[in-house]
Image 1: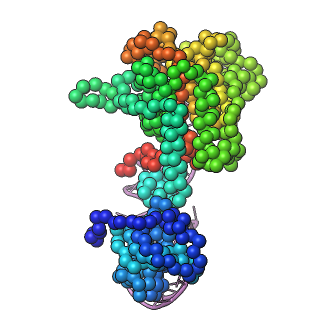
Image 2: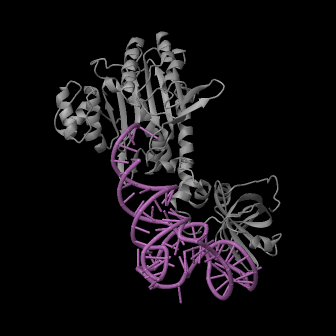
Image 3: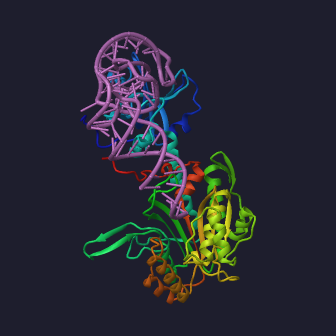
Amino acid sequence: MTEVPYRFERSADAAGLRARHGELGAGEETDDRVSVAGRVMLVRPQGRLAFATLRDASGEVQLFARSADTEDFEGFAKLSLGDWVGAAGRVVKTRKGELSVLVESWTLLAEARRSFGDKWKGVTDVETRFRQREVDLWANDASRRVLLLRSRLVSLLRRHLEGLGFLEVETPMLHPIPGGATARPFVTHHNALDTDLYLRIAPELYLKRLVVGGFDKVFEIGRVFRNEGLSPRHNPEFTMLELYEAYADFGDFMSLSETLVSMLAVELCGTSAITYGGRALDLTPPWRRATMAELVEEATGAPASVHTPVEELRRRLADAGGEVRDDWGPGKLLLELYEKTTEAALWGPVFVSEFPAEVSPLARRHRRDPELAERFEGIVAGRELVNAFSELVDPDDQRRRFEAQAAARAAGDEEAMAVDEDYLRALEYGLPPTAGLGLGIDRLVMLLADTANIREVIAFPTLRPER
RNA sequence: GCGCCUCUAGCUCAAUGGCAGAGCAACGGACUCUUAAUCCGCAGGUUGGGGGUUCGAAUCCCCCGGGGCGCACCA
């Protein structure tokens, strides 16, 4: 291993140099001495001259070496693609007009022992791209831009929510009872306590306990884990934003979510009228609001609701090619019918509201119809992006809902919830009227980065281990 | 979990039953304004792994493994 320095003092980066000296004329030289560092992307040795393209986190700048001016010119001309170097010299523009650092001294900062692939075609093998993200990021500018956009998005979200008076909090990832969503959990074991714990499938219940505790506007951005299949839209660990606001209801959160998403689109894409997958998508508020019943009627041509006779719902679901189970009530049947006939065709943005209470065990019953919940999903680009509701605050009703879930669980539904006594006790201390919202950060990034695969927006997506 | 497709040099790809190849990278050399520099030279392989059919297999068949897409499940 070649000995390399422990530190290197930089005075400029590529973007800074372009900002400062971009206007130089071809062949013009300055007395501005800078030191830069980065990875060598291309080398063009030419006798007693040599040019190298240096990339740092901010962009690219050319290194220009001359045997007359450059220390160890021969070594410089032999740099390999991928080597990291630090270089110092004056800023000039070559006769051909390329902004360059005319290298006086340089030092190898890391040797690239492995070559990074074809300098023109890069690395396109999907497996390499995701197993060796460091190679992908080096080779593919688009990959770097997507992760950059993700970082900026999360930062903007935090700033915006803090501006609205929300408090960022952290709640446990290890849960004694998986709750807050219906999904199969990952199980782990704590040795000292000799007890199984579950990686959280949602932070929801803990966040509402913080509201009970008096934090009236809270949010958490964090990883949740669901032990389910992988797909272009599903990774076993993904990032959720959940936020809760006391004294607000689900209508307030429709406004909040459309404002939030369109703000992010404007900040990150320059417009709220974006395209996704080649298809136009106008995120400008207000988004369409429609009930599940209305949308199912639109899609199927016949009215359907939680009050439609169960036999008719069963028949229509079966006709649509859906599975029908005997223990499903009208709410579950309507939801299945909606998912089978309606959801896939929605492009959005649209808020689908008035979910059946039967399939919304943590949502408050609708003020006009107790069979419905004050719950909506925000469908954007054909996918569920947001799920929100007026929170169920009544501990007795919550206990009954948990018990119905536990019964479904006992009947074999592995995703149904269990009775969470800690949460019920918290509700007994009093949860004020509260609105809650969950938003999939990965999907939001996919939307604004216009990527079709969730793996593009996760630095290290879950892969089967190599053997 | 099931179905279809796919895996050849470090990277990007050829070779469809008959001698495993090219470009780039790497390595050696020439070149004082290059931009995927150019030019000359050299080297690089258990064709994902194992088995089978065949005179002969990267190519056909079977098993295993990785990956992609679809379905199922879900956000």
